[in-house]
Image (tube, rainbow, N blue to C red; front, side):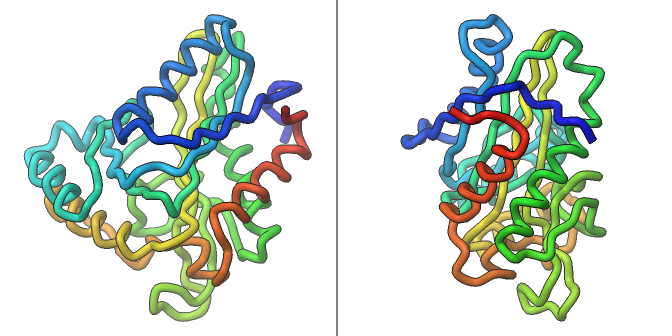
Length: 241
């Protein structure tokens, strides 16, 4: 599959968080800047504050207020994102990768980008010894055709059990696109708990055993390790500055 990446990407590491909603909105601000040509194609990397990012459909459900409260009760800030499907949770044990670049016909390549980046994150995780693959896991939270999962004995399950490790979402505007990925690396227990309570409030069924982290499969792997692996895989496709 040909790479959808720009010839060069600027890497920006966000070292200070502005809050759950502000960090989500910042990605859209950057998308507008890249589209306008005031900023080059870029990667934005950051470790978010504990957040439950609800989808637009979640926000219209009768149980949404209760789901927001369930998030707060678990120490997570509820926010509604513009891209993506159902609720996803993350914290500072996760890595958010926002890839933003100009594209004359940004809509045409939307599905191909999901497949390409699913493969990219799979290869990055494989380089860390994770038995990773792409595809929806039955019962997963925020289900998606191009979720990246890992296989192995984790979260009390037997060998061969699959857990979701990377969720992806895309925002396409005329002339540019934002591809946002969340990689769960460390401390999966709080994420399972807040998703269990939030999904119950929304009346949505899912299997908590599908939620996990990279370290559940490869103990000792850190967010820094995953960031380095992702950038190394990116470097196979484009120049990073």
